[in-house]
Length: 374
Image (cartoon, rainbow, N blue to C red; front, side, top):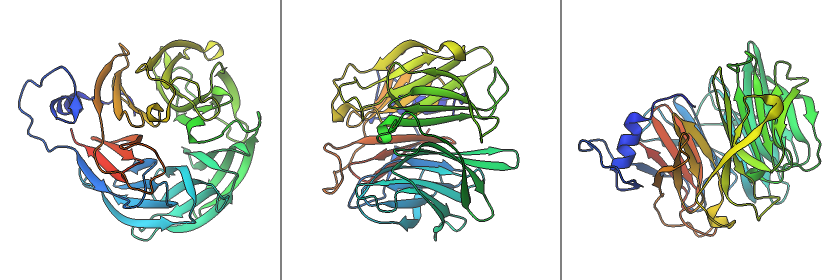
């Protein structure tokens, strides 16, 4: 998601009352304010993914995936839902390249239907379960297409990293590789992350970046998904959500500090120089100087142009300038907390996604999805 211009978006965000910054716009703002849609009336939201004109957002307290029509990117609408068992916790979502399949990594508090759900969303109004792969608490999922072959990679609390071949005619998954050590390296959604680069600008090969609470970050040559080859790592600190910016001359990894295993770790983003995969080193850290408390946790992240958007629990969405490391702007979702939402404060920004011209932000407290319009 890097490399796209944020000029028009930044101008709008800096000018609206919900974004705060010290620079006034050069001309009056004529575009509409941020749009919010209530996805859940009883709980909060988790991960959000968008692929073309279709999107999906996780109703994290209900074990429900809401399917979105995003053809009008400013005003996404809920058109269908996939309901599973109760006692849901967090999870993850990813679409196939054609948008016909949705992969839902599910975790629960009672081990009910935990694992990977493959949903047929060719009819968004009627998503159906095509395949179920049991697991011990599925926290992150990544879909990968290489030529005619399709793969799905899962980060699981019990099995670790699991690579499966995906059959797009039936929706079936066939596990082909497991990287289980160290044991329990994934302990929750805040201790895992994926980033896939189809063709690394420097090496010309596919790279898979994997972050966990026990391994830090590992970089794999994913040319052969059956046997990924570890090329580099940084393991000085447990890491979670991850983003990567790569050019022909450098690689930069942005990784959130994890808090599942080490709750005293300050909430910040570790910036790593991975230009030399054999010598990954820390460059700096991006933070707000906040103590390690739930209200300050780093949740979702996304890169867009020279900005890194970080969902900071109750502190809202923070945009860091990747060149200077300074805060460019902030956004705080609005709305009344749902009583049954499984978080303490409100609002509670938990994920951010860039899709076309839009920024989508989910709130784990109010059940609202906010679309920021350029």
